[in-house]
Length: 370
Image (cartoon, rainbow, N blue to C red):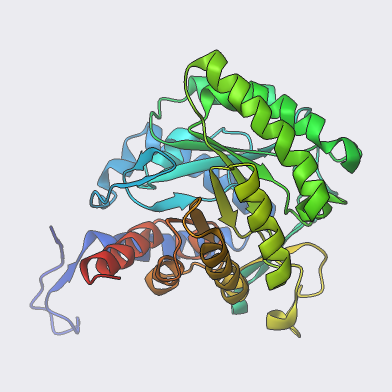
């Protein structure tokens, strides 16, 4: 379906007739909205945009969004309506599930959530680097706590696939981190399609140390045991997924892959944000502390996805995230073996049109035999 915009015989108008597809209309509309949002501070814009998405859904305005063609894919025993999901971090508390779901994502991931509410790091803690289609954040797992998130999930009308991303409180010693993860796993298990264990945020002191061999084993073993207990208790298996960083050597990735296979983890998300600044040197805000996301992390993320796919040998699926800003970068992750993809920073810069663009590019790969 096309929208007809303005036929005219007036000599003052250079173009007599224009046809805009729904996708183009969404892109143009979001471009205008983004320009307005970018006049606000990044964190204010974040809250305003999420509130706007939720309001649009409640008013039925998201019904005019172009539909994403069905492209079902079965991963971890779950059937995803399309392979393009929303990464964790945008909706930390599950306050905007229905609005985000109306945009056409194949699945949503909310969080990161911790056992107790915490304010996160001091503001400012979110910075745009538009020249690089990038963001730096040092949010620090700011959230209202796992009980609030569970309440929001229960209130949501959304019945699609929902991942819940869990972490540790900032004041929990890293050697006791497993206790926080177990608390969260217990509370979210019955409400999640899958649960993601976030051990790769650079904004919680010591968290990334949990990616190392013995520390990772010490975390995964009790989590896997608890997952099995909860599966028996609730009568269903909820996949357990681990999210890792891009700032890893091939040897680091191999250690992680070995532990994931050893404990029969259901999936892995690659990757979180990077602490490298090589791709943004000289740009405003480039030296801010925090994790860099967006286009600059694309190459490192894809490398980790590729390495994991090779090392895991099909034992568990890889979900690719990092630097997806268009269809090509989404398809790139699938080309190297990702089963699903997630977007975040690209979605902020490009808006809902990115979902359809990414899904179409991945569908084209499948049609052409990848």
